[in-house]
Picture 1 (cartoon, rainbow, N blue to C red):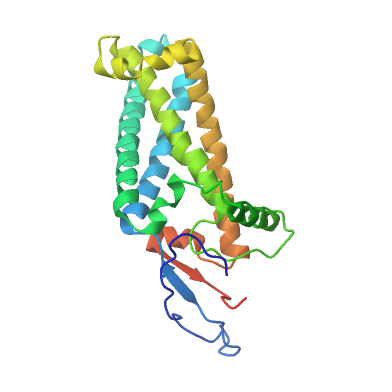
Picture 2 (picture 1 turned 90 degrees about the horizontal axis):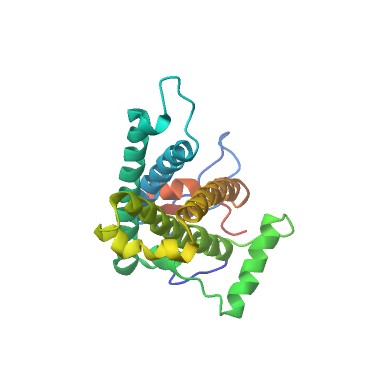
Length: 248
């Protein structure tokens, strides 16, 4: 079985049971507690907030036609923007909390914040995972994130969410005015990107990249549950990752 950083000590098998017909014994189930409650709460709260941000962000960028008047003057658009800003602030607070928990939490809480690209062993293990996703090998069993999933979470979530927060709050600061504390903090982004429209374009593009990442993330989790014989999805509810057919 493949290992990852600071793996918790294994627990004894939960059970050895019979199948649905009371015959052929089922192979041992072995579980590891890897996702603490704060990590699980943050995960599902972040999922809801990103959904709200993508939905409101899409309509902010592409407002529907209105028979009443200019959409920029209607309260409906103002309400969408308000919800977008509220969700953005909640997401930012959650990101800070998650970073704090990476320091005080268990070893698995820290995995998405760094990837050991400098280690040859990581590249070999990542290649094994790629072959497994391409149906070229059986694959290993990972207690936490496999190397490829870890890199994807680091690149598309840790860095991606930080990029979205920085660009989004810069656009928000532009509306607050150049005298606002937020503009003084993030106004340099307009010089870096060249213009407000360019910054808005990259922020909008980041939304579609996060949506694409979410689709792949959900697919990989379902695939691991079925083909990897491991409780990937339910582990983010209970915290326990259970391996079926562990001896394989």
